[in-house]
Length: 386
Image (cartoon, rainbow, N blue to C red):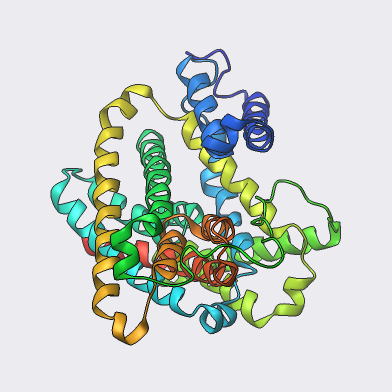
């Protein structure tokens, strides 16, 4: 029995929102928060509170977030995904991203074979495919599409994903400094000293809104609600309710790419979508049991380790074989792989930190493609593994 009753809806909402705000604050203002990221801070705090039985591990509020609030985040995050620009400007980084995405699927296939997850195997394959081709929003979308809401397992998978991603990012940053990598995929620009004006810092995480138009906010939310309703209606008409989130995603991409004047009138859409993703992650962390984590967490770490190892090895081997045709250098490989595993923010941050000005935009473009299609590939992998 928890201190706060599962029926105390207002109190539980207060705690969840406070935890989300704490995560944002910690990432902006503390060294530990920047190292762990705000998501991990919020989720860790939620797990502590739930396992100390201050807040319940099961409550109607969590179900509301999962079924009614989270679907809104998907169109909000996809409204500004410019596919035409992504395919036009991506260049070698897009090739590296595409090869790396195939490597993710192959890694998931091998991990599913080697790691005994039982009934969790197909959904784990779909979730990790989605997040390592797209990002956390794709992870969430596949969770909805597969109707998977086991809080403990979701939290264990999320924790394993974030830890593995951080390790992979450090490996990618180190690759250009390895003599063998420079010899195999050399580029005169790989570690060239920076010249000219200073490189602009990577775009900060969207925690502060400098300009907010309430009319634009209302428009963004109205469109998001409308697309969710349309996606659910189409899925019901097809008799496949699990397709609702995917249809919503497709409609958001169509709207974002063919209704630009409407999108430009929106305000705060991406930031609100990010906020809703935080709500979801905190909600599933509230439902986590430490004993479930102790039981499944190491297995998921082993699983993600296999996926990312296969992804990296496959990308390097294929790039070596096709180098005479495409001349993929170590810089393109690093940013393409980072766009897969870490997403838009991490890819642009590494390109900027390395002084690779010309790869900042391609990294963003590759990440946008993954963000747009990660959910679809994840659901396809889930269906195949079933």
